[in-house]
Length: 77
Image (tube, rainbow, N blue to C red; front, side, top):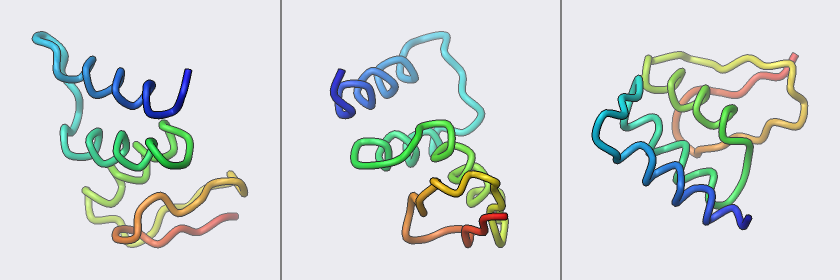
């Protein structure tokens, strides 16, 4: 399935009655970034960290790309 179709599916799922997510804005940011690049789980973690005011996002994933221009700094260990 194309990346855009998966992102559309995520957005539709999150818009259903009875579906609750930790942060609608973080999920929306992750879905938006996912349309063009990255792994959805990584993008969501980064968006949540940024939303919570983290100065940096630390990961062991050397393949992780900076998902958004604004937000926490990305540091790879």
